Image 1 (cartoon, rainbow, N blue to C red):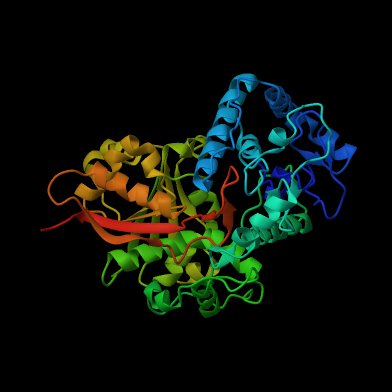
Image 2 (image 1 turned 180 degrees about the horizontal axis):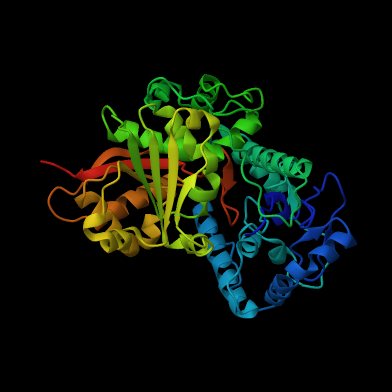
Length: 480
């Protein structure tokens, strides 16, 4: 499993080995690929085994005329963004044959987050096309360190759009960049305190869930009047803050910790939110069955003990039966020597209340798994598809969507941003033809229970996206 790399390292503002920031140590750029930076010869040598292949490939492409030469003559930001994305994809496609393998996530990110001027989108290689040119960069970072300018004139011209204009969560691009850096380095510092090194697997998120079991189920819809945005980079959305306060969280005075905790809590809370919007008055029996469809590491690794919050929130449920279904689970299921059914260790509170949680893993597409069960298949109480990307694999997802609709299974779907959620909705509707179409219970909207940790858009694009950022829900076919 790959190690988490802070965004600052991808843009040359932190050492690519120890992640020391440019404000802490003087950084030296790799003279060959001109993309990664190190704070010392020792760090460069220590990272050589990981870096050498991608270094050669990047250095080769610096003088490779087969990579399209970028044109910055277009006038609109949208055209420049599309061109930057097309160029990044072209670079990645050219690097595969050079490496004779697929690029790792870290290598893809190194291409996607290559620094660009926020106004004209020029990269260092566009400003200094000579591979033998000075080791000094021609791009100057903003004080947020994740955005860059090729000239003082471009810095002045883009100042309002970068530092004043509000994008997501009530913050500007500059504020979101600064918050992103703080959150990532808070995690890194915590890992160091726990004695973890960059050779370990990525640290688990700050997993916190209330230990109490509620006396009765309380709908998350009660927080709807509070749904809003942050007031500053040292804040969290008001509905999340109120939920943490109501749940007895001991970290309400540290917004960064609360934001980090939402990485795991977004899973159970979005699931519970699905019950609230799909059932007019949810009634829970002693056993609750949930199917997480298209499952990847996110649901399995990020959720962890936080899944228990579902059991904590529903006092009448004694058995929480969670099924994780998706082809990407093959690596996980192969590592299981015996049964793919796991009785999870319950927290002391759940043990005392006689509650159990079962995780079952199925490395199949959902419709294939259902058909393999035949008459033994039983419908879940709810189906959840996180960060689905349905529009990107519409033909592959279509049989699953049709099955969910025909079976009348209440389903909630999330996406990273508004554009994707609307594309996913269109893909769902295209998958189900005939009388009435899909019964959309909740139209696309911002998910109040999204993860509060933002991810900057690649290829120099403005904006941030969020895990489980947007959502919609459907149940069966439209009647009448």
